Image 1: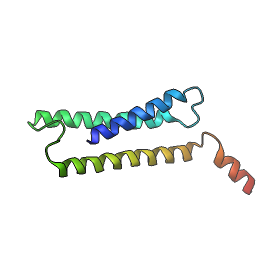
Image 2 (image 1 turned 180 degrees about the vertical axis):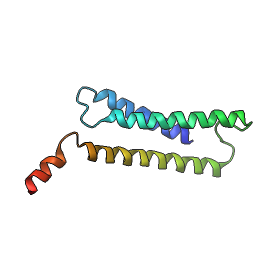
Image 3 (image 1 turned 60 degrees about the horizontal axis):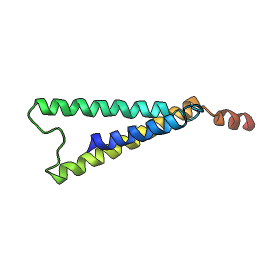
Length: 104
């Protein structure tokens, strides 16, 4: 479930990046790369689970599925938070610079 949620976030971020590619002021490519990195991480984790004789994705136990879904949502939220911090630091639209210039 974690892989599915992260994959959905990566797909949405990629579509946003592609749709806004000429402008690139919101840096959706950075968000997409973060989510695709997480997808790769969960995919490798699933491969190692298969090599250990476990299932790739646990769907039999609802408690495990719920925990995986909560972890997937947490990963999505942390990805958005990290992207927000990145935007604040980089300030691609120069909003903070304009705001702080008027205060002085």
